[in-house]
Amino acid sequence: MIIAAGLTPAWQQILRFDGFHPGEVNRAIDAHWCASGKVLNVAIALAHLGAPCEAIALVGGPPLALIEREFEALGIPRHWVQSHGATRTCTTILNVQSGQTTELVENAAPTNDAELLEFAETYARRVARAQIVILAGSLPSGTPANFYRELLAQTPCRAILDVRGPELIEALACRPFLVKPNREELGRTVGRELTTDDSMHSAMRQLNAAGAKWVVVTNGNKPLWVSSQDGLFRITPPQVTAVNPIGSGDCLAAGIAWGLTTGESVLDAIRLGVAAAVENVAELLPARIDPKSVRARSKSILVQAI
Image (cartoon, rainbow, N blue to C red):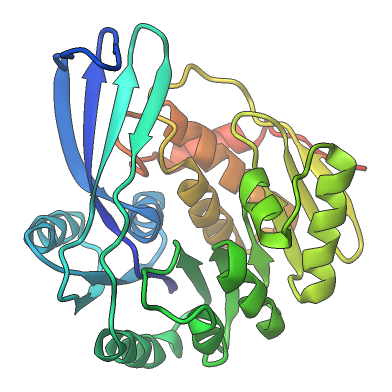
C-alpha cells in the first residue's frame, strides 16, 4: 500500500486556446475540469499505474463533492479531512499555437489547529499499513513548518517527499528515503541561486548530508540529477510533444513509489518515475497515465553515473 498525503489539493480548470493574448478577450477552444494538486495527482497516477494506494487530503467547500465523485469513479480509497475553507481552484492555460503553458495558482485556504490535529490522527491510523508514504505539496498558511517532520516521526516505512523550503529542511531530521525538489525549489530550500550544475550538485549533497538518502532534482524537460551518499547520476528524459506538463513531477513521485513496491532497484524505480512523468506530458489531463506505456518507455531511459 502506498499512501499519498498532503494538505493543498486543488480542483483544476484546463482551458485550451488557439492563441492566447494577455490583456485581450480570449475564447477557449474547450474546457476540462478534474481533481488535481500534488497530493491528488500522486494518488490518481498511482491508481492508473495499478498500485494499491490511498489518499489523505484536506478538502472543503464546493470542490469537495466534485473531488469525491471523481475519486469514487476511479475507485481510489480516500480519507478526507474537511477544511473550513474551500479547496482552491487552479487554472491551466494551454496555448496550442505556441505550445506555451501558463498556470494560475490559487493559494490554499489557511488551516487551523483542529484540522491539523484531525489530519495527523488520520495519518497515524493509516500509515501503519503502508509500504511507502508520499508527502506532497506545500503547507497552507497557519501550518507549522515542522508539520511534515511530525508526520514522519510516526512513519515506520520509506517516505518520499515532494516539498520545499523550511518544511523540507525540518523533515530532513527524520532521514526521509527520497526527496524530489525541482531546481528552483532546491535553490530556495538551501537559500542560494543555483546558477551552475556544480552549485546544484553541492546543494543536493547538502540535503544528503542533512538526512535525505536519495535526492532527485528535476528541471523541466532537461536532464534530472540524482544523488545519494555514494554517487551522482544523470538521467536524460526522452523528448515528446508536450500537451500539458502540469502534474509531471507528481507522476515522477508516483512512478518511483510504484517501482519500489514492485521490487525495482532505486535507480530503476527512478527510471520508471521519469517514464511516468514523460507519459504525463503527452496527456491533456494530469496523472491519467498508462502503465504499459510507462514500462515500455522506461526501457529506453539511460542512467549515467557521473
